[in-house]
Amino acid sequence: MDFAIHNSQSRTIVYAKMPPPLFTTRESEGSSTLLDEKLLRFMEQLELLEEKRASLNSLIEQGWFSMSKARYSMGNKHVSPLQYASEMEPLVLVHAKTLDSGELDFSTERFEQKCCKEVGADNRSIEEIGPQEKGVRRRIKPKEDITKKAVNEETSSENAPEVTPVTKSDQNLQQDPLKWFGILVPQSLKHAQLSFKQVLELSAEIATLQTAVLSTRQELKHSKKHKHEEASATQLDSVAD
Amino acid sequence: MLSVISFNVDHGYLEGLVRGMKAGILTRADYHNLAQCDTLEDMKLHLQCTDYGKTLSSSEDDLTVSLVDSKLRENLVAEFSCLRSNALPPLSTFLDYITYSYMIDNVVMLITGALKQRDVAELLPRCHPLGAFDQMAAVGIARTPTELYSAVLVDTPLAQFFQDAVSESNLDEMEAEILRNKLFKAYLESFHSFCKNIGGATKDIMCPILEFEADRRAFIITVNSFGTDLSNAERSALYPACGRLHPEGLCLLGAAQDAAQVKDVADRYPAYKIIFEEPEPGSGFKTLEDRFFEQEVKLNTLAFLQQFHFGVFYSYIKLKEQESRNIVWIAECVTQRQKSKIHNYITIFQGTEQ
Image (cartoon, rainbow over all chains, first blue to last red; front, side):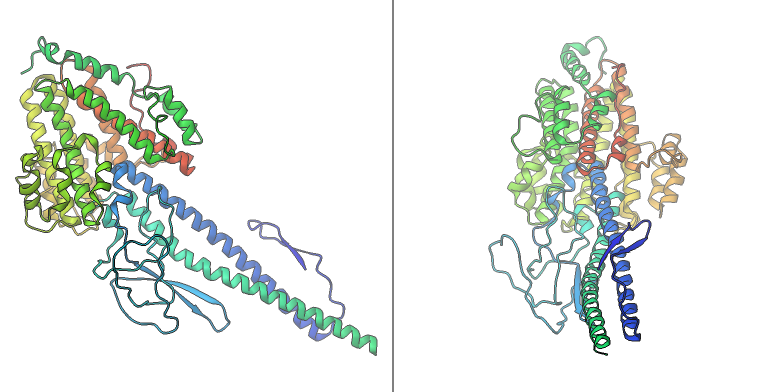
């Protein structure tokens, strides 16, 4: 079955080359309706995904641009990698849980202060990707399944924003990253932080939506296959009769 | 009191030099060309036709916005060093006063860098060269402002600004910010009285500029402190007292709790009322800092209308800094493809009337 999306703005969905059902038994009617429903759901999810992605892109651009404005007011060297430590502790964690339907659901949780609860399942230790610094550090037990670095710190345009989980050393204070640049920071820097915070939450939603889209696509394939098998079985029956 | 007749004996050459350099400041047409560029390489080519010449071409590193900023700064530092090395008192003292603000910024940058466990070797190259002093490497070691003063800065020119800034509290982000503003307050007041003592055209040009600077700092500190842990009392201690807001305006600002109250205070002073006014619909949105920068540029361009005073040196440095900011802004817009906001720079001289 081929289908084409006209375009998301005009919202018309065009089906092409969908084979008509050969026999209109009640069963094949039922599975056709199911297939239609799944297809519609798939389309809606895709559309939502597109919208969220577009919004993510524009928020990221906005964030970087607000940072440039902050650099204009504060001075270029005052909003740069010099202002943050090379080791830092995440303020936002990502929870991944598997729903009954088998889909993965991602949600973000923002820390107000350090907490050390153990959460069941998968005690993977926090991986560190990238060059390691020398020195002995105590690896803390993982708090959740997946831990992401706090993406809501500001990185300058010189650094590509890498998502690297970090190992922590004990006494790091969890601090609002805005304070790295001074106490009296201009409004544009605060706007930048806000944009990046929204980006974080949106990323988790997009990840969830993406897995949902993939699983809906799988379901569609299965339903289509099932329907074809049904149709050919009914055909054989009627020929036999 | 500097006599108009004898000014040229000691300072005429340098005034001539600075006026020559001022003629190379980018004009509206130059900015227009730069704004048309699509890449940093194009901008480099355009800048070669200006007084910047081969400044950007000489480096082999990848062209980034940060590199552009560093090169422009180097250029300004070279020009300033040329002026300073040939200066006689009192111009030499005046030029030294200009460098103290950069020294204060460097000290705070070194302190906050040390808080983040940044290596001194990494921080020193990023400090502003105009504010370099011998004991810079040792600044990161101090734990409290008192220690900073007695161990490190007592032999530097910044020592004179430490009267109110000494305290025993640990140097964390808040203390570093408070230290920065207290040092700057003392510096500005000292500079203001120095210019007043020189008298003549220098006083007439410089004192309004420094008063504006003091008032600007008071407003910006107030506006940026909303939502932070800085208390009203602590904030009031940071306001420089040499501006027009002193004393009534500063009292009112100290008590302000939100942006509307700040605007009320500004409305009592015609010059600041304009800055805080709502923009007309349709014109691009400008931040408060942008509007203060615009006003600063206007005041600084006035310095060149009179002769035989030191204000031209100060104004030249500040205008070149604004030019750097403009070029870096255009560069950022070009690299981030945000062409809609590219015209937010401030044109300094219109073009033909230099």
